Image (cartoon, rainbow over all chains, first blue to last red; front, side, top):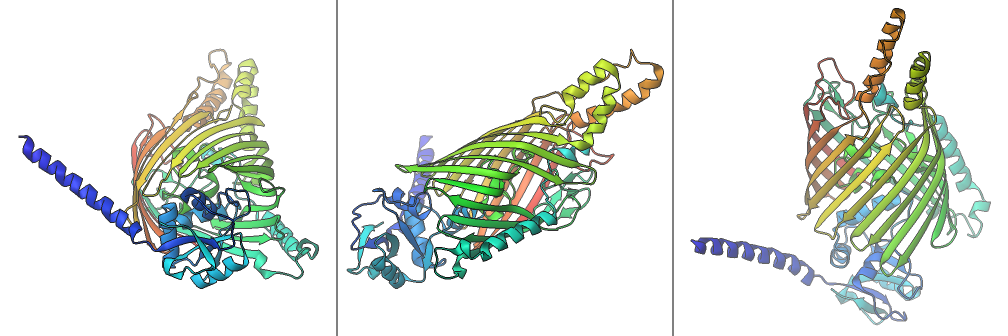
Length: 148
Length: 427
């Protein structure tokens, strides 16, 4: 009597595991890293601290110094990956979040630049800047703070 | 019918006011001294944004209208089989960052007005000064954060539903303040707390002969955000007058002590209205859960009501199905024996009966209903979403619920099926 039940439970468990793996896969494949200037004194930052900075919940690094987040353009693959991996939010959720902030006059989204090279240039001239680039775009001017 | 038009002060300010604010904003933006601190005029201090919704709604009850709110003249059901007036709107916003501390915003919205036009009105118009990184003050018009989504209820794209649950969101009759507000925001170990308080007034001419006014408005709201969790508490009080009802209660006062007592109890002239609301939201990413509870006491014929709702949703790639249950109940009496006819001379029995009927028709329209909603949001292309929603509403015994334009064939206490489709955009 119990055998078919056990088998169907196993199938459910397998399906769930498969789904979970599928979700995990998408983050494993992510190739985006959070970066600051190589001259920055910042050493560590948690994922939630990074999310708070990019979602406008704080304008400061944990040590109290001002944080200037730099975004890549909407629709850029690296940007979508960044938000999914580090904030758990889809591009539409991020857009909905900023719509709430903008249309109530509470603030405005981070400044946007067009590609990872521009990000590196911004970061080099501004030690308070924080952003994200593809792992392959990392060079000596930036310091990787967080990776997936 | 009367109560549909009078539950609260008007939200559709005149175009004159809009012009005045536009002039003020333009003056500030163009003022050379305001730009002091920057060496030359910087066009990048301005930013422009827009949002909008196009929606169609069908109601199964053709003997009443489902409307966008108490200021809408008509909607879906009786007036239109499918109405585009209920949810459709377009908004535009200009923001000017005059200095690093001083900014100004102007937001105008075009949507169905009480007079069935789409003349734009000013939703937000204020000047903000950032005193410290934590403290900011604003002067001008703001939308009150009574419920979690009150100040963004028009931004369909940022909301999970086609529209916020009407049971709860219709509890707050005053949603604007023309005045002053202050906000104190602190961030500590991942926890963000925002405490805000506002003082102001709201006055606008709404439907002909129904000028409404809300004076000495006070709001205190606190929002706590920690990771994926948000908690919101708000208290709001104001003194509301509905001049159109003054005649009714003056008439009651002609009936001696018992009439005076009824008029004192039920009049809506400078009456203290109190609202208290609490809401929580948890959205870790793949799924979300949110709920709110609120209560408004009008201390008058408009009664006391409590409403709550719970919404849950799950995101599957670009699709987000969601479900909502919401309910509103009356905490005050929905009928009154009124003037006692036995002691009256025969000539006054007729007028007294009429007054009692008028009083009871207002008391009887205090909404009692609950709704189960099923919906689906589809983020089909960047900056656009499509939502489909089905609402099954059970009207309370003898109650018209939140429906308007009641026709002779309307059956109070019945059930209503509502089908809605909207497309939202932000730019």
